[in-house]
Image (spheres, rainbow, N blue to C red):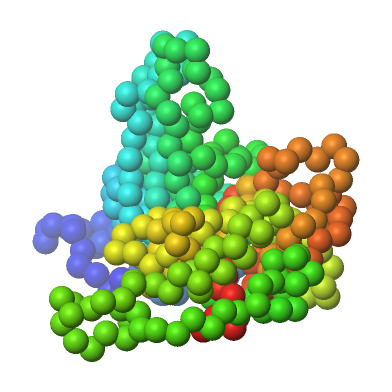
Length: 385
């Protein structure tokens, strides 16, 4: 803009009319200030930023954005596509997130089967949230503002997504299985369901680990070829697929460990126990397909001819929230404190006593309110020939 501009008066205007136009023309008087306002809009100083955001009608987004300058650049474009999936993507991009799936409930009902939930929206985020707060408040606020007015944002997930069983019109209605996985953080009403895998990998237990548990057996010396040593056609093979004594020793060790009620214990950086997670131990062997993939290798459950033992746990939402685990270890043969039920997924330090710890491994697990941590060990046994 410039203070020199074309006049709109007709060519036969009188000198008085030209003078009145000049005196009452704000551009002639405030032209330099107008030019300054234009420049400030492109790179506004902090003191006028709140007023500029108000002028653009973007004030409702300010509680959810740590960097308000992003609103000046993209806010108008966001408004133009508001109510579409693209606006959610643009809004979440301001805080470093994106979504991969956007879906609406189509066939479930609420409030005594009177209202279909077609207006409820949930999204799969492109990654795990960085922190419960303030990240989830920002995600909830921006997503709700980006949706159409008739839609309601109710759930986000990543890494752990268990859907509700369709139990309407049955006795199981309103039971625990009639709800999606997730936790809520007041005052937000949304559910947040996140999961994170911590694959410890392969650990080897030797004499010092197994002897206190009465599970150590002297290694056997069984000579002979197996299929792993074959360097000739299969039809010429005349030996077993595995050495029965070696396999039997491994199976016996595992059978002695399974009844010892394993738990996975988490400790902080000074060695203090944060808590114990109930663990599952499953004998496995290599397979073309199976339920366990560790280090890119597939294992299937096999109690008759096991090659290793998979020990794993999944902490419940909120377990150890606020603490960071620096060590994870397997604890065998500990005892539950009085009143602690055997099926409890997470136990306080005082809920377990005694026991023998093996397979200590360094980790870095920041526990939170909305994440279930999945920790998995692959246990083998030393001195096998």
